[in-house]
Image (cartoon, rainbow, N blue to C red; front, side):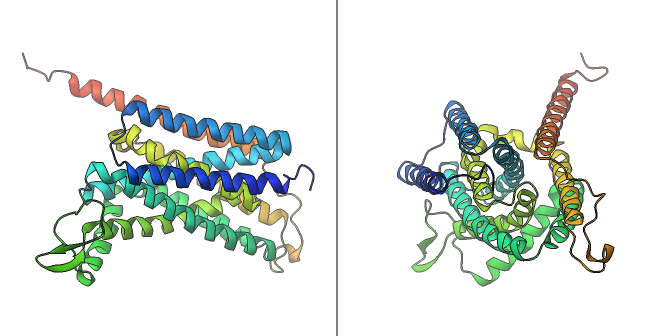
Length: 335
C-alpha cells in the first residue's frame, strides 16, 4: 500500500503509548489526589498536543491520507469518550465515590475500556478482512445508535443502572462504607466487598456498551487496526484529567449529545455507502458493486466531525449562558 507506515514506527508507538498509560496509572496509585484545574488543563493540553504530533509523524512517514484518517478517528473516539464521561459522572455521583479516589476509579475504567476496545478491534478487523458485507451491519447499527443517542435521556440511563445495581446487591455481600480504594474489607468480623466493586463492575459494563458503538464508528474512517488502536489510546489518555477539568460542566453541555449523534449517523451512512460500493451480497444488485454509490473522503469526514462538535459545543455554551442570565434576572414585582 502506498504510504503504508513502517513496522518499526507502529511497534515503537505501541510500546511508548503503553508505557505512558502505565506510568500514568502508577502515579495515580502512588499519589491519589484531587488535581487542580490548572493541573488537569495542562495534562489535557499535553495529551492533545501529543496526538497532534503523532498525526504529523504519520504524515511524515506515511501520507496525508493516513494522517487524516488518524485525526478523524481520534476526534471521533474523543467525542464518544466524552459521552462515556457523562456516564462516569453519573456512576461516581450515584455511589458517592470519595473524590480523592475518583482518579483511581477513572484510571481503572480507562484501562478496562482500552482492553475491551483492543479485543473488539481484533475481532472487527478479522470480520472486515473476511466479510465485506459486515459494513452493512456496522452502518445500520451506527444509524440506530445515532437515533438512540439523540433521543435517550439521563433517566433512561439511570433506570438501566439501577437494575444492574439491584442485581449485584442481591448476589454480592457489600459493606455499607468504602475502605479507601479497596474492593475487599472486613465489616463486623466478616469479609465482604466494598461498594467499589459495584462501581468497577458498572463501569466495565458501560465500557462494553461504548466499545460496541466506538469500534464500528472508527472502522468507518479507517480499516487499519494500528490507526484504530492508536486513535482509541489517544482518545482515552486525557479522559481522566478531562473529568476533573469539566466537572459539573458536562451535564450543562445540553446539545453535545446531538453533535455526537450526528457524527454517528454520518459515519453510519458512510459505511452503508462503502458497503454498496464494495457489494458482494447476491440479493443486492445481483452481487455486483453499486457503481453510483459515492465514497466519502477522509477530508470530508474530518470536516464534518470537527464542525459537528464545534456547533454542538458552541450552541450548548450559548444556551447555558442564556439560562444563567435569565436565572439571575430579578422576578417581576421584586424589589
